[in-house]
Length: 196
Image (tube, rainbow, N blue to C red; front, top):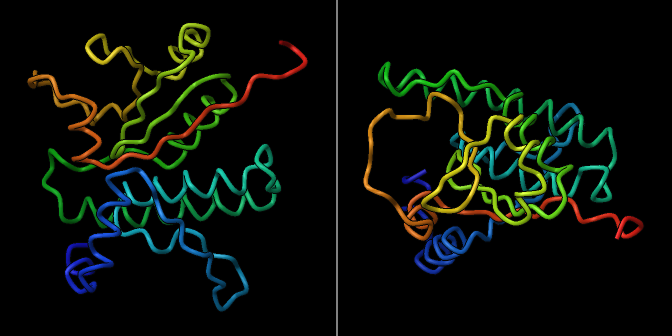
């Protein structure tokens, strides 16, 4: 990723960095491969980039957002395939303590569980999800989805179990986390107007 950024002209590099800091993930246009399949995620170079791209494409292709079941299934299959490739690439270069056992299905499942909750604001920072908004009403769903409460940030969060370091770090602000890992904000399902 650094080599690609270093080779970009100055204005593009600064624009991309500013967009990433602001949470404006630029969704590239899908490509058609030789077999005629649409490729949505092949630009990702890391697992974190893959998750951001997947999340941005679900906003366009999910049936609740105007997409079709077939498009969503194709996206999920592509996500699972690229996730395994990037996971293997990551694990080949990481030391034993930093290797991952996370699966693509875990991330898909947590996003599907949260998608059905009304009034949530979901923020993807690195590989963690930070959840705010109407969390009190959805607390049972959040607990069932293995989300945890952060008292210091007054937000729920989800991370893969191995992302837990076991060490106490000094408290990091959400602004620091957003700057360090990037951020993309996602809103949960809108409340049903017939119920209000």
